[in-house]
Image 1 (tube, rainbow, N blue to C red):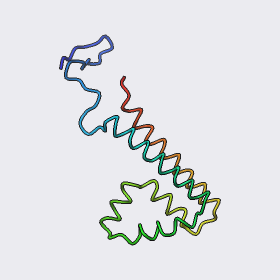
Image 2 (cartoon, rainbow, N blue to C red; image 1 turned 30 degrees about the vertical axis):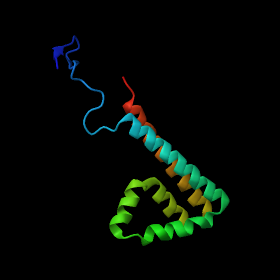
Image 3 (cartoon, rainbow, N blue to C red; image 1 turned 45 degrees about the vertical axis):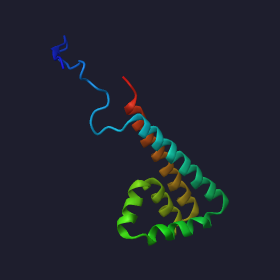
Image 4 (tube, helix red, strand yellow; image 1 turned 135 degrees about the horizontal axis):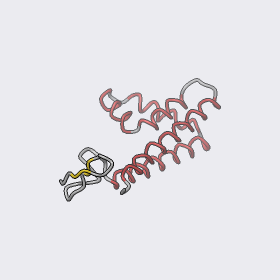
Length: 122
């Protein structure tokens, strides 16, 4: 990697070894796949809310009845949806639950979109 000095005093680290995707950065395919997966899951969440919200009860009980290590993995992998489910199953007023679930949807889409934007070529 060549290091030269620019007029503004900053170092130029361009060279053949420079890569946009460094170690530990997700690939574009992973980011697009994550975005598509969460969009599909949130659409499913909305369909259930509009259809029969009581359908969440067995899903919530199933999540809570998993062995602890598997439950932790499920919460980590599906964190926004698990939080959305927890919000929906809470005893809060339905309008509060709906507003918080919409906030989780927005947060998920912004977070995944930020990951997509970070992977765009300069």
